[in-house]
Image (cartoon, rainbow, N blue to C red; front, side, top):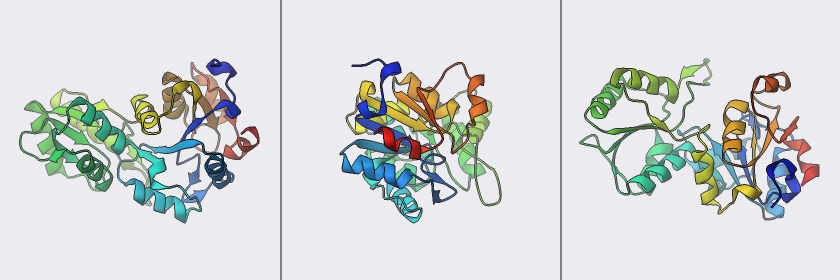
Length: 264
C-alpha cells in the first residue's frame, strides 16, 4: 500500500467526514456536499459522517441533514455518544453509569446494554446538554470523589446557540475536574479513538481511509494520528493563513468538498 504522502483520493476505499463546516453551514448544505455523498453511494464507498455533538441520535441528525438537502442514512452517522458507548462497552460490558446528557447519549448507552443509575455507578459519563443542572453536576462530583471513573464525550468548551455561545461539555468537565482533582478520559475528537471506533464500524483500514475536516486542531490532527489520509477544507473554522501556525500538515487542502469530486 502506498505511503500516506503518495495516497490519492482515487485510492481511498473508505471516507470519514466532519459534518458542520464540511457538509453543512448554518443548516444549509455546502455546495458539492450532496454530489459527494451521492458519488460515494454510487461507487459503493463506505463512509461515515462524524460529529462531536452527543445531543442528537443518528436519526435526529439524518433528519437535520435531510432538511439541509443532504440524504445521509442514519447508519452512516457516527457521534461522540456512539463512540463513547463503544469505548465503555469494550472496557466494562454491562457497566453501571451515571449520565449527564440528552437522547443521543442515553439512547446509545441503552443500546449498548448499560444500566443508567445514580447509585454506585462504575462511570460518570458527561455529554452535551442544553440545560446543565447544578444538582446533576454536584451529584457527578460526589460520585467521582467516591470512586466512579470519569469520561466525557468530547472536549468542546463552547457550542453555538441562537443567542450566541453557550458552555459545552469541555467547560462543564473543567468545573468537575476542578472540584474532584480528576480529569476525564475524553473520547471525541481530537482523540483518534473516535476515528478508530468509526473505522471499526465500517470495517475500514487506516491505509485506505481518509478524513475530511475543517479544523486543524481536531479533524486533521486526529486523522493524522490515526494514520489516515487527511483533507482540510476551507469552508469552516480553519483559514488558509492559519495552517502555517501548526507543526503538522494535512495531506491535501481544498477550498471545499466540491473540489474533491473531480479527484474521485
